[in-house]
Amino acid sequence: MRLAQRMSRMTTAASFDMLARGKALEAQGRSIVHLGIGEPDFDTPAFIRKAADEALEAGWTHYGPATGLPTLRALIARTWRDRRGIPCEAANVVVTPGAKPILFFTMLALLEPGDEVIIPSPAFPTYASIAGMLDARVVPLPLREEQRFTLDLDALRARITDRTRLLILNSPHNPTGAVLPREQLEAVRDLAVKHDFVVLADEIYGDMVYDGAFTSMGSIDRMADRCVVVDGFSKTYAMTGWRLGFGIMPEGLVKPIATLMNNSNSCTASFVQKAGEAALTGPQDDVRAMMAEFALRRRHVVDGLNAIPGVSCFDPPGAFYAFPRVTGTGLTSVQLADRLLDEAGVVTLPGTGFGDEGEGYLRLSYANSIANLDEGLRRIAAFLRVNQPVA
Image 1: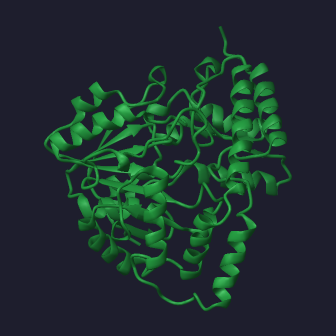
Image 2: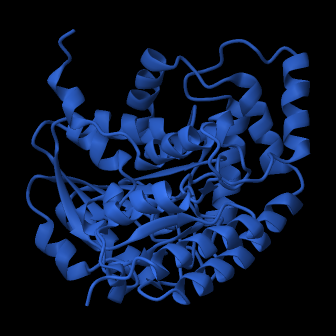
Image 3: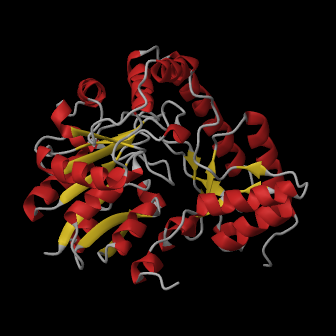
């Protein structure tokens, strides 16, 4: 079968590839510690599951509007006004099956072949995959550990041209856990207004900040008409498999994105949306408990990695990832990730799975129990003790 050329420009996430390899080894009887997949290991809170059951029994099993249930759209707008300071109404919200469709639909609606998309890198690989599929030009903006993986504004200015159409920001950041400060977002606003480009702000980890405060790009003055905020329920409410996300956007984008929804998914499952309403209006105790546990794990993993010779780890202020520098091991990112899986039984992700700028790093997810994290750290340290670089 002859495939369209655009398919060669799309990639698959390294996290799912490594997960499959780890599962295959487990099927052979190997003991594997999974530190690769970006998924909370907590159950969806019971009251949310109960709300979904009740919605099914009440008949919320039919088509809904392509933009989402009016009640959920209004609730999201009110919650994100209060929680993030984003000046929005229900008319600015589109609900989708997961957050990724908003990434796809925004780029489909805005980009022509040859348009330029600036992506701070390393980055969630889906951004470049979608842009490349659309024949847009991806312009990487390197993120440096010495700048705490925040933006180099001079480097950003140097990359803006008359073809720049979109800047993608992700804060808190996957894979590094960095959080962009307000002053950098305000500087981005000034550039977006001056050069007339749109900011696509992926804020799916916005509730997962341990140090300092999180500022939404959508809350920055004069960004309401040139910013699309991408968010969802997967991380905060441990609802990854429910597929419930949304975008907050200028009203002029709502109709085209609703048209794309109509032609692809028709709508987001109605009973899942009712569960989302319960998540936002119900008790937040489970969220607070999960975040407290992630804070403990973060400290545990970062300290453990920094105790391993040849490894050093930036202290991530957000998300649930550690991004250790591993250049002292004498191995490339891919070599080390492959050997840790095959020889030590630990799933990690090579930094290059998030772009060439990730060379010299691994990504570890600490969405796992303290016991499993300890075992993973023990295995990594033991592997490196007997595989030191030749002087």
